[in-house]
Length: 233
Length: 233
DNA sequence: GACAATATTATGTAGCTACATATTAATGTA
DNA sequence: TACATTAATATGTAGCTACATAATATTGTC
Image (cartoon, rainbow over all chains, first blue to last red; front, side):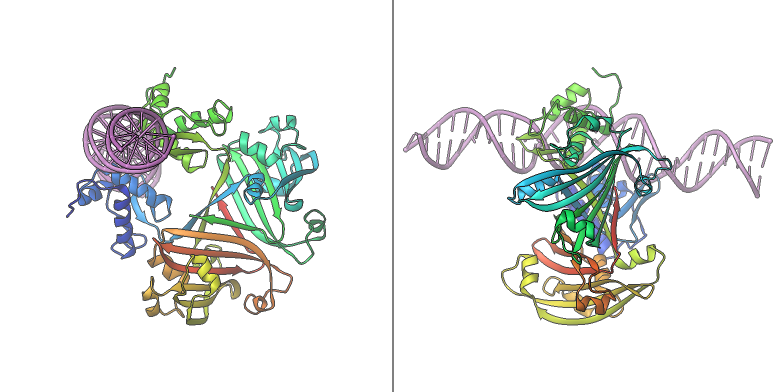
């Protein structure tokens, strides 16, 4: 069946993928056990396991202990978005980055923010409104809420100098992240901060993060007209 | 130093991450070799390797053979977008899915499409314009170019019945995918297909895929006003 | 000193064993 | 029959060895 001495896990993965694509195994079908595949390919189970993990990560198959491996019924396109610190995003384009703190205050979490976090009770939060600029022009406006119970240290940070965006990314890892992307027509108040015209289409990114079960931050970032989010993978 | 008999790779990963966050190792610093970490934690090199691979995938560190492991200078937020087949996206919301083929013709690739693919010479492609509907209302309009040299079988597919979106996802794996997301004001021609009003902000997704070096498809999908892209991870 | 050939080194992978874990299937008991 | 207990099973992980690979450092030659 097989000739090569050693098999790379990518070869095994590609072979299995091919079998799925030529419908040797169709959507919803159960695949052979890893051990069986290993015997079939003449490699170790660990190699099949490595291949399977990749297929599971890319959304091609679904694995469950004891349940075995199944071909996913609904193939998905998975793309990894790299969302850098806004400062770096600006600088990488060769532009001069600037940052303005617009407002900052301790508030009780609003209904919308509670919904983002899935909280039932209001919590004290630091609300930070700030503007990121590229070459002296508005780039992204962010309206951010930071949970003071989870991140009390933020009170000691001088947010006129360092953006909350940057401080949080550098000091607070998160275990879960919700992301919502959409388009919205520019309003009156947008035009004040973003210098946009009413009628402009604005790109909005909403991001909410947790560490374990504890809320960290929830923000809405509105980008300047013409902004594009781009990924390669 | 360590008490537990066995160490899970997630524990090791978290320990290393913690050391990076409390600046035991700062941005740009070189981390100890895997073997050293293994000795330090009292675990096997393979366990450290597993942990490191995860940290590299999440963008926390960067690894190079012989070069060792470095803490990334520019931390990024990585989010995985799951882009399902449009039909499934609609059905999952409990809506009735419909599909309309609007136009279909063989054309020479336009300048814009050649740029997307990075091609220097024009190639024959199948251009397919189609509308996805949810509950009889326009959902997403897609303008798609399919490379006939890479995917000749598409000519035999009845695109009035099955969407190119669905056929390609089910039959053509890709090895590379570029994705571009942005907002655009609705135009006259948008309002025809999407029943949008001029002044509406439309969410646009551009996707280009290759298998190896060969172009597969490049498309611009314009969503109805109010559309949101959402991910959890 | 310049540059090619060679050695060194840290990560990457393949193969093996043993055991952990989750989940289903089978069994026992009231 | 209903439900708790136990067994069986496929994937997941940890640890080990050996070798592959890529990138850097060293050496040798002119």
